[in-house]
Amino acid sequence: MADNPDSYGKKKAMSDVSPNEIRVLKYLQGRGDAIETEISIEGLGEREISSAISWLESKGLIDVSREERTEYSLTDEGQAFLDGGLPEEKAMKILMEGRTSVREVLDGLGMNDGKIALAQLAKLGIKPIGGVLHLPEKPLLRTLEERRRFLEKIRNGEKQLDAEMLEHFRKRENVIREKKRVIRHVRINPAGIHAMQANSGNVDMIGTLTPDIIQSGSWKYTSFQRYDMNSRVERILGAGIHPISYLSRMVRDIFLELGFTEMSGHYIEHAAWNMDALFIPQDHPARDMQDTFYIDSSTDMGIEHPEVLEIFRKVHEKGIRGYTGWGYKWSREKASELLLRTHTTVSTIRYLYEHREAPQAVFSVEKVFRHESVDWKHLAELHQIEGAYYGKDASLASLKWLMREFYRRLGFTQLRFIPSYYPYTEPSMDLIVTINGKEMELGGSGVFRPEVTEPLGLKHPVIAWGLGLERLAMIYFGLDDIREIYQSDIDWLRSYRVKI
Ligand code: PHE
Image (cartoon, rainbow, N blue to C red; front, side, top):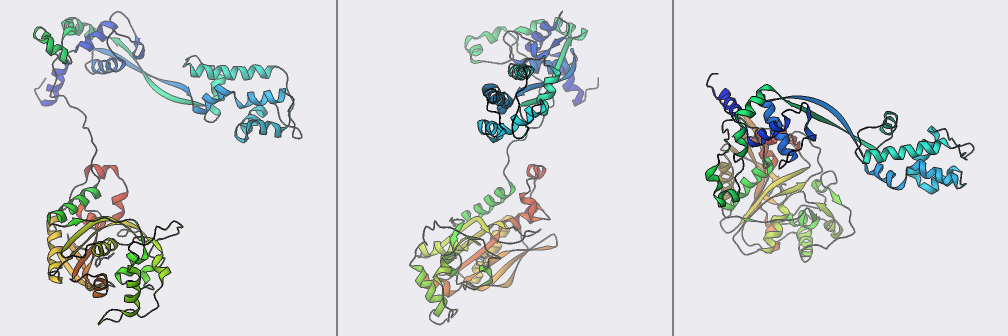
């Protein structure tokens, strides 16, 4: 045999026969055919015997033939039939008490069992005539008794089963369960006898080292079973992290390294914080049912910091010094509506209201919801990379630097800003990244308008952004369709690679 790595592994494995294998060989010697599950050897469990047989087979020391067997067991319903009686048995009792109408049987057994009973009785020739069932002669009782005995046999795991009865219960839904099992028949062969004789000393070898063996020092006087370090083993696939979690952690790490604080919010928000706080007018198309999931609920916990409502009303109706506002009649009802947050900018603005002393640098990577038709680049449920910096030195220039720095740390260098519009920022910029010649819109950003900051007592500029995590994942992992991220394709989940 050539000394290549393949045959090397095999040759080594061949020459060693483990103590357990020797025991199995000894058992098989002079016994002819044995069925694996019937082999019993002192000190060896079922699994050790099974594993030894597999090894002996691969080493060519035993002959193995396989036989497929069907085993039967009771389902929960079958067990209940055995404990409390088959429905047709119970129905018979009712008939024998003289209650012979279909109604009485159904009432006595309940709808479910009653229907089964009637169907079974009909098959046995007892059919209702004018809503009344007629009691048959004796032989029926014997049939029912046989059915019950059959279920008992199944429960006891008996192997000899009456074919007709088996057929009957296999046709009935959900009474017995069928399981196919492969039974191995094993027989020692001449090579096995030879190996057993040559290695019989191995029975005393140490296969598994125990504390006992070390403490008593008995290891000094015995030999150890050799292990073949070159034999090929199956690759074990452990648990892995989902690509979105992976990317989300990367993003989180970057903002933490930049000195940002992580904030968190909640899925359900009042329109007041999700929209009004951000100066989104109450008739804005984004508030439409077409774009936003509203929630019907009678258990409203109340708006957080209700004092802001009056502030929002004033800003929307009249504006602030130097700015006119929207000039419509603001509605408290509309502000009180509950919805699934459409963006995490709601967390930003509330956080800043709660932390009014500058500077503040916050971020979150959390889920938002949009009533949107799903396609290759849109999801109705997605994560936003949200963040803001509040401070004297916040400016469009620092915003652009921050965005470039964030994406640079992820490996993207081709970033572009284009003018955009949001009711709460001025100026506003959208971010576009180019990767492998393709352009992808990643999200929005801007400087909060004074109508947003001033009324809430924020005295310095705020720069803010909201970026799509899944869009980023598409280019990060090289996907053509955003839906692939959540399709749970197991091959992809096992083998995804970063593509930049
Ligand atoms: N909230 C905007 C969106 O959902 C993104 C954004 C955040 C824009 C902050 C400007 C400032 O797309």
